Amino acid sequence: MPWSETFQASSLGPLVSRASIIKELLKKFGKRFSANLVIGNAAYGLRPDYDLLHNMTLRIAPLSQRELKLGAEGLVNGKKAIDLAAQTNSVAYILHTTSINELLSYASESKVRFMVYTLARIAETRAIAAAELMHIKGTAYFERRRILRDEISQRLGEFSIFGTGEDVVMQVRSLVSRGASKVVLYPVFSGAKDLISQMNLLSDWIE
Figure 1 (tube, rainbow, N blue to C red):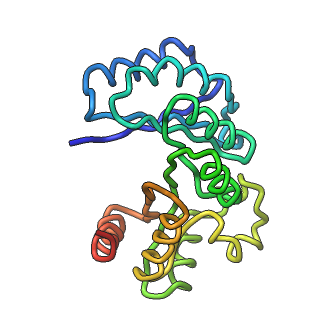
Figure 2 (figure 1 turned 90 degrees about the vertical axis):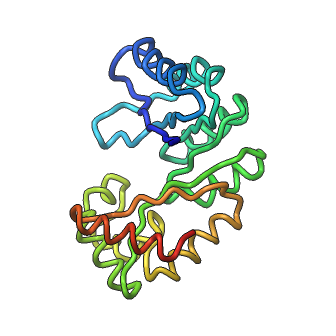
Figure 3 (figure 1 turned 180 degrees about the vertical axis):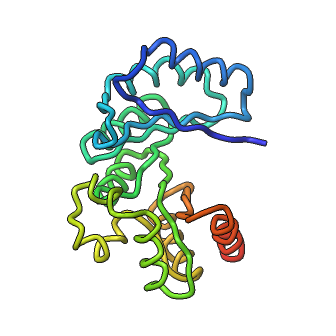
């Protein structure tokens, strides 16, 4: 069964040891394994470092038998990740944030294949899905991205897809129509039973 794993490009830990772990996985599992190399949000306590992403990509790309995915949060680093994907024939991994529209356009203009990673929540109505998403995810996720607490409910669509099953399908199709080769859904959940429920709802609506 194929799978992928995400690795953060940050200032913590030596480059060689981290790259060697990924290279070993690629050698051992071949086409069953694909790596996602991403630069995350500085608010999580890491120092995003594009040079690390660049250097790790150049070390790993020649060994990748499946798609190597490169991503970064934020507009500036996001565009750099897309440029690097173009340089190494990799896939851009675009995070669903306030920069998504500009990054989608930039990837399309650069003729780089890309996929989108997004939070997702399904419920009986769009209002219920929004309320559940905010309750489960909390405010910190959005505040780290410089969204004021009283603005979160109005700006959920800038970070996630949510609503009824039909709403979610329409939002996924919209991303695909804009060029996304895949839409990676992260089901926001409150516990194991809720996760299973969300997965069942997703499977009911998405083939």
